[in-house]
Length: 252
Length: 252
Image 1 (spheres, rainbow over the protein chains, first blue to last red):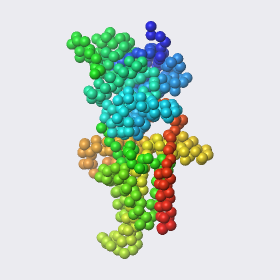
Image 2: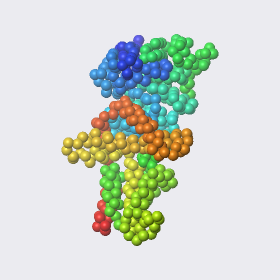
Image 3: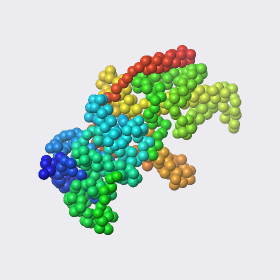
């Protein structure tokens, strides 16, 4: 029994240019504690879809309901509930130190200084950034910046963590660290939605897989069910699956 | 790893970093005004103070001077123009163009003053977080009627956040063009257009992405304000700066 949907997307359309590009009639429900893997070709609408979940974009038609409230009616409520981590951490980081950047979100929520301190300390510990708290974000490595971007969102204590291409430009060690963080957040009860082209990295963690193609939802199943159909939608099938082997977890 | 330029805030235990931002802002303004009026002995005193604070902040001279190359070009132009236009005792006469001793002295003093003001700006931006500047601006504007302090403060902090980013991007674009032999292009207008077009595009894209990322973290004018802690050091620093300004104006 999945219970009540945390996010409900009803016939969502988003038209960028008046010619029907963007999102075309997506309907789905996202439940608590799910780990959803979103895949699809470049330009399939993954990033646009994510921006609707976070109320950064408003539907051309249709509706996105987060915690029972439409994003049209109360966008701030959706922004608080759904934490969005962008593809490029450089444009997401606004603070002059690691500590300040993580505090940015809680400050926007008008929390007290004491609560902000506590939340930042927790996020620093969760993402393994304690030793970097006074460093300038500009001096961090790619993996550290990515973890900082996630820490900045996690400090706002969202119910859903949405990550757009989190593994791009990460080295192997950075990728393993990030996967370990995602696994930890999921075990702690956070709902996670990840868009990636490198699906083998979170394949074993995902409880559900969604495939978008030209703005449409073309598949919504458990990952093992979809694995052999992936290349039909322009998504690379993991090597292990091609050779008939079991796909192994990537976490350390 | 990212780069940190001359204007980026750097976390440090230096004395200037511990000052209350409001006092620091007033001190810097007083010293800048004093610099513009100062006689030679006061100018030497201010220079010693500025170099002392810069050393305490661990500002490395070679990268700093290298970053300020275009500014030195401007100072050289100021020096030359003053040397050639101020009447007095001729020290150089080439093809009927004469440079005077009085002009060279006046040019040196003006360049020296501009350099000190620039150094004060660098010291301020390296030792002050933009969030602190925003808080201080908001605090100073509080008694002013009909001014939306929060909005003005946000604009100031965003400008301070963007200035180092634009400089970094200019450096990246310039390096990318030099790697494709842009130095072979001798036409300065074409060189400038080649640099400014991608730089402007990149800056607007970054501004757009950053606005989205800030909105995704519930950014608004109404946030938790930074706290100010005033100590006797702040009062002492303000007293010294007031004294220097008084001496400067009285001796001019």
